[in-house]
Length: 117
Image (cartoon, rainbow, N blue to C red; front, side):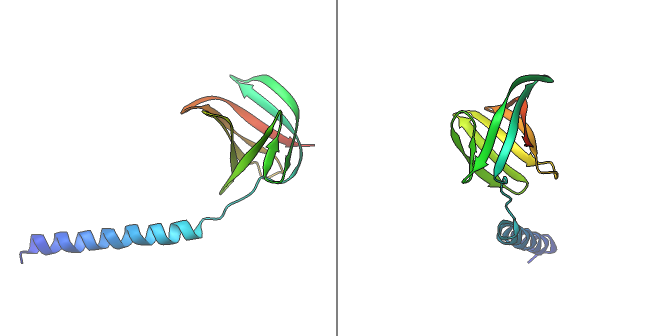
């Protein structure tokens, strides 16, 4: 076996072990946060302009605005699919509130903030 072939086998084995470890330990090691239950003021922004501000609450793992929308937990908060193609991301601000981008498909169309009341 040539030195080049042996090096390729070793390199492939090392990469395989690294990918396998990252998959195993990365998935198992991820912590998920929840958006805390409570009363909030929801503010929707686009281009720095407030589009809508209204009372909101989080209860039973759902964001309650006009309807009830399940919150999907992420490592830093969660996200909500308001209707097909429209997603808002809720990232903890570390002070009891949440903020994040609002998407329509893959395009950022604005942002949302949840401020505790």
